[in-house]
Length: 65
Image (cartoon, rainbow, N blue to C red; front, side, top):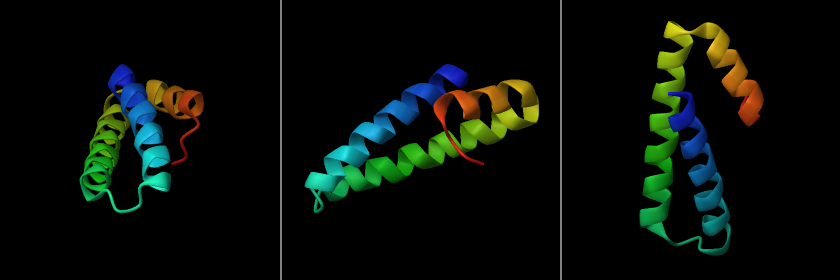
C-alpha cells in the first residue's frame, strides 16, 4: 500500500494545483475527494497492519496524522 499511497499523494497534489486555476471544474473536485478518501482508507489499513511502515510513509510523504 505504500506505493499506492505515494502515487495517490502525487495525483492529489496535481489535481489541487489544477483546481487553483479551474475553480469550477466539478469533476476534478469530485475525483480529488475520492482520491483523498481512498488514500485515507489505505493509510488506515497500513496503520493497522504495519505501524512502522505507516509512520515511515507519513514522514516520507510529509503527511500529518
